[in-house]
Image (cartoon, rainbow, N blue to C red):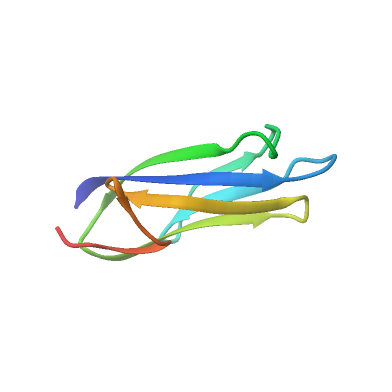
Length: 90
């Protein structure tokens, strides 16, 4: 296992009640947040440090509930652009 840095930009569009989202790496829940910032002006950059073994992994940003819309963009793994599924070769 070795330490890896994952980043993902989380955007939200919402009306009167902020949406909630969860971030998972593989099947491990890392955080749950209410998106309280103005979604039309700001986004959250999640900075995640995880110990991962070699093999295929995934990052999931999941909306919880029906308020607004959550979108994940600009995923990187160790500074390299990635999709939500990625492979660690070490």
